[in-house]
Length: 71
Image (cartoon, rainbow, N blue to C red; front, side, top):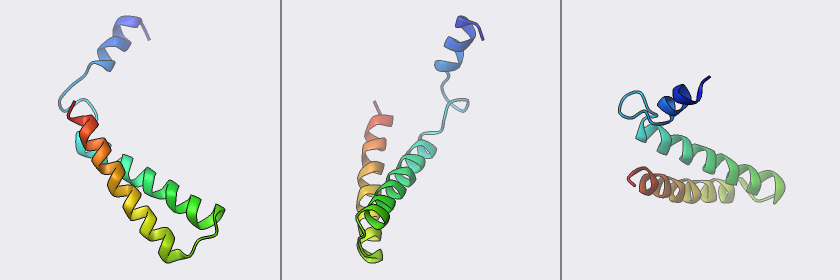
């Protein structure tokens, strides 16, 4: 890929770029899955505690992704 072509892909906007809400949803799911697996499997927390932390961290990740997507 040439430099001009790669620069063209890097500056896409609108429908061709990643949808803002898709980015927020992916950020939320990855953060929630990460904290759930960390709590449940590495720190040996209960299922209820792990789910609660996953929801909290997912919400925080969604807010962070929303703020960054509106820059």
